[in-house]
Amino acid sequence: MSFKKILGQDKAINTLRGFIAAGRIPQAMIFHGPAGVGKAMAALEFAKTLNCLDAASNKIFDNCGLCQNCKHIDAKTHPDIIFADFAYQAMLRKEEVEKQQNIRIETIRALTAASQQKAVFAKWKVYIIDSAEKLITGAANALLKYIEEPPPNTIWILISSKKEAMLSTIKSRCQPVAFAPLSKDIITTILKDNFVEADLAEQAAAISQGSSAKAALAAEVLGDFASLPSGAAFAAGAAMSLPRVAAQARAQVASVLDMLSVMAYEQWVKEASEREANKNLLTKLVFYKRALLSNVSPYLIMEAALMAADDCKINFK
Image (tube, rainbow, N blue to C red):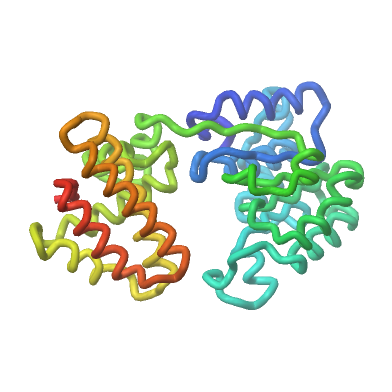
């Protein structure tokens, strides 16, 4: 893969290529924008491009994807490029990924310790922190001095879908790189490239809010709904079909709540006679989202939300 494979983010990619072309690469950056629009992919492609061993690729400020550095970065086995997400933290803490809710100070200390070591075989050491808005205060403060004065040829990339939630002291020391929501056409293309049927891809893209990650989950949920009975039994069937693992069930319910919110808003815009009912439904959906965050049973929330939506003639069948 190369920068060419990142769809819909020409402005952000051109900014990154411009840094390389100018020889002025910020040593601390925030890649910010909606979830599921290519920020993590771009961070890894940027790390590959900085360290690619192919001279021809270097001339066009891209990477070959085939050299030793590129292959190790793709596999996330390169000793000088670390992608720190919840899976990485779970490995450090010897815990399940589902238990990771925030980025802990121990994770940052592991990264900062590595950043002080000599590179093994990369020109640029790159440390990528996913979901950087989840840094607890102690972790953010532990990171601060290292992004202020990193060693030569060391880059920190913080990835965030909620930049406003990050500490101002962190944000003020990082170069922002903005990523935009993706168009419906691009999301449809991404889903189809990942073997989602065309009709389902278009349906999921229409309610994706510009996020390929939301669209992929929506496509999975809508695919599961297709086999359920219609009518009064649908809400109960949808709740019963949720995964038994609570974290997975919550993710699917959150996806359904997002989809219903989009559908309710679209109906509110198109049908003036239904505006009061849709306003009430949107209020209920906000309540259900808060309840989901408060660990109320996702199965109860799913059934209640689908029944409330059906009362407004909004459904998936």
